[in-house]
Image (cartoon, rainbow, N blue to C red; front, top):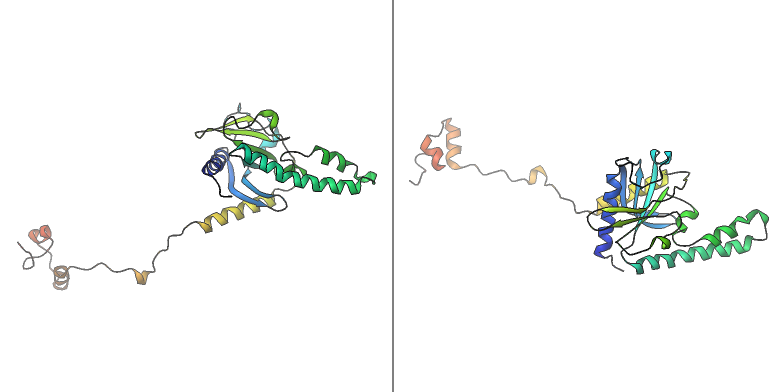
Length: 237
């Protein structure tokens, strides 16, 4: 299904919003192994430009190096479609849990699978510390949001935080930084490049005949010659 213009605008708004908050690396369409494609991912340290802005939990976590995922949803159907794809992952975990319920060592799987819902596949094995959903205004309600996910709303001019995301501990952010770097590299390589001609292919400017004669004779052009662009004897006037 081709990407719509609104979805592209939402990704651009998310990328700009993250960059303005001090993240050093921001990329679109980041491929995460075993998770899929994240619309926008960023890594860095949040810049406290506005202490009252409820973007993140007001704790020491945001002063550390961390990763943020933003999923952009242009329509309600897109949001529900993403829910359907993630439910397949939930069912797979439930089937695995059913095979392990006989062991007391794996009782936690039953509770984990029962709690899975919207977008929770990103939290089963967390790759990011903060997760956000970015939508147009009035697309969702706060009660419909996934667990631990924050909600951003873009009106085309700015991005507003409706609900901040809950912090999620991640053991290693290096893998996500590598995925962001690969996404940025793909974007640079896919962009049309401007080929510069070789020095041998650059044509030398033509030298006027009168100037070549003057240079050979080491004579300077007169004022009349300079005004008409040709020396005396070559001027048309």
